[in-house]
Image (tube, rainbow, N blue to C red; front, side, top):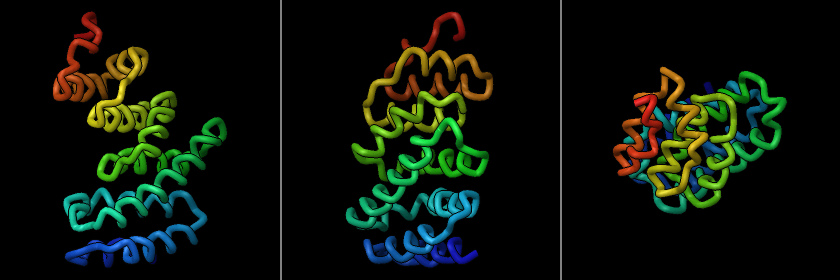
Length: 169
């Protein structure tokens, strides 16, 4: 629980500085087990409403760490295990709270994965950041009953509802 405790302590602060984020990231970096590393992103998701308390530098540090994690996993996506997929899933989900150009570029790679939960989180953040998503990505998500309605709503929210396949509407 060392990593979880560090995330809890970080988010207790009323103003979260880069040094506060870096303390939690140092602990995350020392954790070798991917499932345990995913606790960082689970904690960020749990405290998402407090991300607004982070300075720009703190968010940038978190974005850099997340991008490095995503890069590590995407570069080995053919051999990624279940725990690695868990890290990638949670990292892809929470990256929307502090997405920068590097993260958005990695999310563009993540939508090519066969795992629709990762694909959806990447798709959603790309749309929200006015990035293009392929018709193939939209079709893949629209054909999956778990994600079809979410995909339609995300497209509608961004004024791109016409990208949803008519025959699946």
